[in-house]
Amino acid sequence: MSTEIKVPVLPESVSDATIATWHKKVGDAVKRDENIVDLETDKVVLEVPSPVDGVIKEIKFEEGATVLSQQLIAIVEEGAAAAAAPAAQPAAGAQEVQPKAEAAKAAAAAPASTTPAPVASGATLPPGARFEAITSGVDASQVPGTGRRGMVTKEDIVNYAKSGGVGSAGGARPEERVPMTRMRARIAERLMQSKESIAMLTSFNEVNLGKVMAMRKELGEAFEKANGVKLGFMSFFAKAAANALQKYPVINASVDGNDIVYHGYADISIAVSTDKGLVTPVLRNVERMGFADVEKQIGEYAKKARDGKIGLEDLQGGTFTITNGGTFGSLMSTPIVNPPQSAILGMHAIKERAIVENGQVIAAPMMYIALSYDHRIIDGKDAVLFLVDIKNQLENPHRMLLGM
Image (cartoon, rainbow, N blue to C red; front, side, top):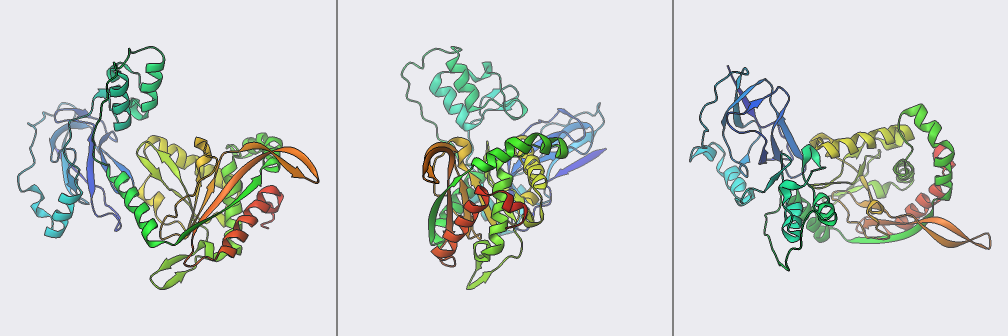
């Protein structure tokens, strides 16, 4: 019995998808729920699992092809002993079933064909790692991969070269041209949209995180035992932001044509870096969440991001964003607003610096914070007061427990 494998139902905001990677070829056995192919959209990479045990009988599209929601992409013959049919080549007019406008859009969006990347540890080498391997003269097939499904990452190549696993590159000056992934192209498009459509301005402040760190040290162990999750910094910032957004609702608003839409809830997008680019899963109704709820949700999103399981539903919406460049060592930055949102809060590295407190010079764990905002609807006064409110809450964290 044959089972059809189709593109999952895509939301209205996503018109099509690109076949990024086939993990099986015609004739390969496949287990139920085993991933067959990765589909890349503008926002996320979707895994398409097999609904049955069987053998891949047909593959309808090659990597790089653009496909639509519910379009047939493969056929699995059920049963472990099923005989695989010869590889099916896409018919010359296969995509003519699409409406002409969709077909033209698909042709424009499809990346150019490239030579398949080297394979190591059973996973396709990503562009950054491939370039690093060429530059360092590393045979990627000899490098143990630590990434998802054994993927060899750029860091794996660097560490392998540092450990003496490869000789000199001999002064080579290699270059490589690769097309942007759909996600990277979409990120670039959104950044340009932000630059061209928003009157963006950034205000800064600094926060003494001494009391937050003391609270984490004093209560962290008990918090973890009670809730099964560690007490991190992000929950403090998320709760402080949610409280401040209630006081300064214009920071939580968005522009729709000539209207300003005020949101009576704090759906906070948390920027998460992945191998394929930045994604922003949404914590919904943070104003009603406790610290443990925030930490658990962040932990779930972090795991999904590591496993490549972030879904489109996780990314929809969001009225405000928090991004933490401090995880990479950033001391200060001007984060870019993510339309249609009107503001984004940037966290940075915590550094012990000398400050004056009660007339005395002391060392304190300080962080610069930044608020980039759409000056079309947010006045500088509101932006500054919002940042000051964040600062006051974090320097007096007990206030957050009282919603102050």
